[in-house]
Length: 513
Image (cartoon, rainbow, N blue to C red):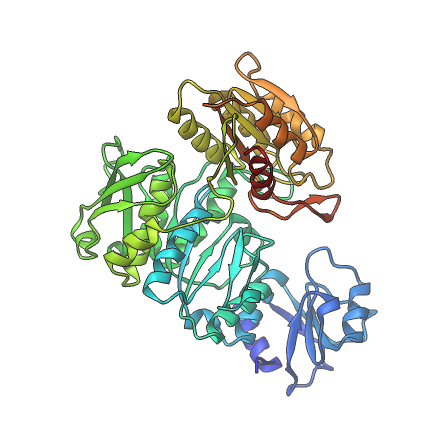
């Protein structure tokens, strides 16, 4: 049974220079049987974390539900509960959560991915590979789903790319308690910005790429801050895989060199790319076939340490798009570092289905429809350019929007990507939050060259999707981007039911047969 004593808490906090004071009413023998940051979820004999947009009245509710002490960055004089005062509540909660569950990360071989685009795809590809080697007993923490065990209720929708630390370690404990020994996870820049993964270390960290994103209010103030937060995954990994073709490879490589043994740094890149930085590549790959129906690559080990992994050869990647070749190579290298053999790597890469990622549907007497999670310039640009190359005679339609209250910098980028890769755009709502979706769409539209692209605005997302499909003709391509299989829209603080792009497209195109 998970529990933690006040002595353990004080020692951990002191070691990390986080402890300010402990009320003298706290007994030295005090032990907590539960921990929570949600006053409604507090159980008997629990420690309550006062974090985020905290309201003083939450303490009363926490005490009523069984809390016997609280932890906060300030003392609440009105509270009857004794307090543990700390310098940083997010860091403290992460440390205490890990300790409460007996440091479950130490029981798991963990592969972690970060990047502006490709985290989810790479994570699913890696889990697919590891599942072949370890009989499906592999945990997954992704933007789409969280998998902590073999039962249906242990595979559920994720709410954050990287959840709050207490939720993260709770899920890690569930993975380990099921006897599973491997975990694949995405790590967002916000996870480091908000200290959700403070103190967490990974066996293998993969830095896929970086381009401007998540910059704006409530997120990163500058690109430099965004890069710094992303690079923390490198700092906190035993072995590191880097994309040598990324524009910021010198930054990430220097970070890796400063924190990781040279023999544990692996660089991958596409064959034939001109790299003026003269970095020594460990793995190179080249495209053998790149169509909507087939994606095959050839992977070659260049360095001696790469050759020791014995994964040279041809591979089929079961998801189209040349940009996904980087994701496939990263997954192959990361898996091989955990001892996965080439046969299972090949099978895992080829037999992959990612919910909401490049799902294709046939619309009778209309264009082919694709559903993808692309939601920023980098991902939208990559998807549109790939689709554009598939049929130069047809038009490319795109249905998209952008989230409210965050990622404000994405909106101009989406407009730019649409200008460069689409012929007709349907702007619509996409988790508008507390913003007016028409205002969000207007910002995207302001950055679209309407001499090149015909732009429409339909606020209701389902109506916009159907309108785009109806307007398309055989030979055209319709990309529905942004939400994939998300089952709700975030509107004014409420998770409002939404069927999901995939389900809407599937049902509508079936009716056309």
